[in-house]
Length: 190
Picture 1 (tube, rainbow, N blue to C red):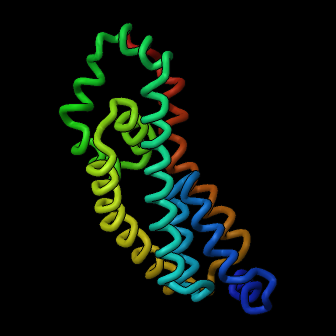
Picture 2 (tube, one colour):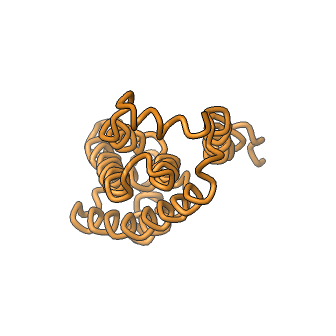
C-alpha cells in the first residue's frame, strides 16, 4: 500500500476536510512542520492545495496572534511588574525599539517566534502593527514553504508509505526541537 493516506481519503475513512482541520490545529504546535505536511499531502493530491494552504495560513496567523494576546495579558500582571522592576526595563526598552523588526526576523527563524511574539505583547506593542506584520510575513514565508513541500510531495508521492512518513515526521520534529533541547543543557558561561 504505497499511498495509504490518499487511499484512506478516497475510501472516506479520512475526509479531506478532517485533514485540513488537523493541519489548522497542528499549526498551533509546530507551524512549519504542519505547513510542510500540508504541502506534501497536497503534492500527493490527498487534499486540495488551496484548502491546505488556507488552513496553514489561517492557523499560523491565529496562533501567532494568540501568542501576542497572551503576552499582552501577561504584561499587565503583577508578576510581570515584578520582573520589570528586577530587570530595570532593559529588555523591554530593546523590544520597544526593535520590536517590529524582531517580529519580521522571527518569522524566518524557527524557534524564535514564541518568545518574540509573546514579548511583543508583554511590552504592549501596538496590536494593529503587530497583526499586520505577522500577517504580511506569514503570507511570504508560509506559501514558499508550502509550495516547496508540495513540489517534493509531487515528485516523491508514491514513496510515501506509513513508515516513511513516521520517520520523516520524527526527523522534522527533531530538527526543530533539538536546538532548544541542547540549549537547555549547555553549560552556563562564567
